[in-house]
Amino acid sequence: MTRIARPYILAWTIVGLFLTIGANFISAYAVSSPLQWIGAGITAYPLGFKCQVGAVLLVSCLGGRIAGVLAQVAYLLLGLVWLKIFNDGGSFEYIQKPAFGYLLAFIPGSWVCGQLAFKQFSSSKTVVKPELEFLGLSCFCGLLTIHLFGIIYLLFFKLINSHQSIDFKLLDAIINYSVYPFGSQLVLACAATSIAFVLRRVMFY
Image 1 (cartoon, rainbow, N blue to C red):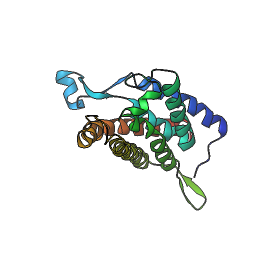
Image 2: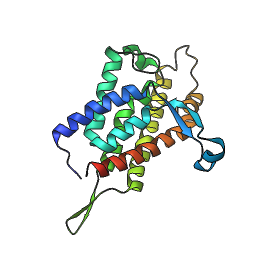
Image 3: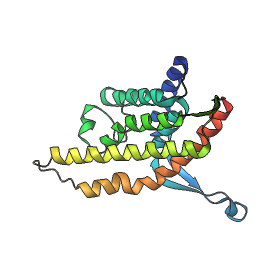
Image 4: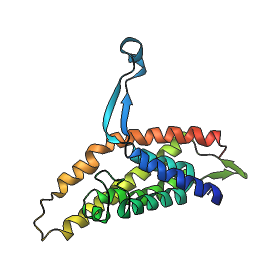
């Protein structure tokens, strides 16, 4: 496992915090196939979601699990007690929303992604840097973790509010929060993988 110096962890924590906040206000787009650029030009298609998940995975791939987790903890604390930086604003009452579980899941998702992204194998005392596909696996596992914990939160939300007059359908919530956005977020995970691969080669780690 590669060790990251504390100044780098602090730096990536700050960068990760601002990236997570900023990405929540940036819509994700996909461009048309390069084969269509000559005749029809470059066309951007909205994915219908923000870039936040991609930012979470990117920081974890670049700064490791500690920086990734600290950035998300700071993000959640700021949103719960001070800034309106969540999709529907902020404040402590946000924990009563079903979608909060997916924000909370950024913490274990960052840990899993950062843990795998900096897991290096050695052969004859030679450190082998992670290849593109291994970083991709790290982002994919981090994304799966986010959705897994998000669904678990939905289950608890359903159990807690089962005796109250709240119109909450668990299956519909899972479809809306996990099934529908997963494909678009997978595109963001691929983008985070590519960017992290290039930057880690540039920064020699």
